[in-house]
Image (cartoon, one colour):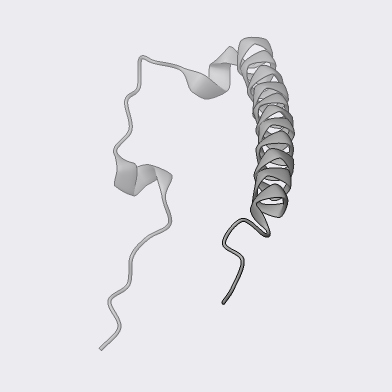
Length: 70
């Protein structure tokens, strides 16, 4: 008969490692996105003529033209 208590310490260890790694990877991901956002907002602030609000564009004007494939 198998010992049901064996391996519980491994489960606790692996859970702890997973939580630790997940926490730090999430922090790294948030840092990278915050850095990217900061750079993009700085670019938008330095070049307001490229992001003028007086000329609204449609999504079709922004994206590439769509050609249906038959």
